[in-house]
Image (tube, rainbow, N blue to C red):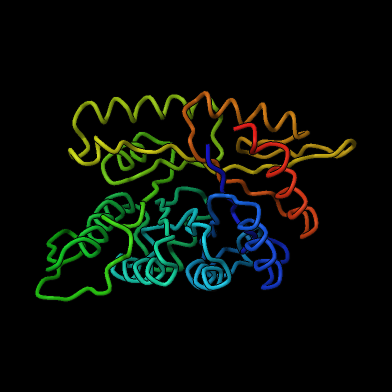
Length: 303
């Protein structure tokens, strides 16, 4: 079991100082990875928590320069809001500059707040799934082909050059978010890992089993079948002291004493999870750093 941290590049008071402190602490405590969250322009009714947010790739570039070994990635990037040629270039550049530490986590969006953001960015919400699937093909083509050519519904190019290639081979890992059947099919066909957010252990287990069925039915290439697809997940993790109250969220969270958190993590391990990305909440810098330390010291060693 590996553990990553979704750093506070958004929320009530994101700051350069806290991003540096958290990122260097995460590396010092030997977590596996650091992730940023992605949004651009939020409607006022959905101002919190993503209205105040540092841009994901810019932040990762800064963090990459302040760390040396911890992996970096997006959890997650809304793929249909961006041009995949730009994404391919940004991730390839980050992978080279970080010396092969980049992970690309992507999703398609589906919440009520996403509808407004798609409108603001002049993106096609209704066809976001088809656009995302083609975008993943485009990105892989640019990363792996010496003479990239592509002809599709949304993108066409040939007689072109894409350099530098990413440092990782065959390319940086692609993690696919979402828990719907369409998302699982996308993960099976295009992803190196499945990376849902905030679903309970039973639903995670069901998704993991569906991935196995899709693989057995030949949806993955021979190379991908041999390698398999990893199971990750992103969750709000709140390690509470005596007297601190749990909060209610519309999604599944991991909350409680260190012992209760460890029990909850074990439920996901039993459901097939191999990598947990922890978001330690928006309760201030001191709480975030304290929870990062407690998790590394009292919970992670059990796995």
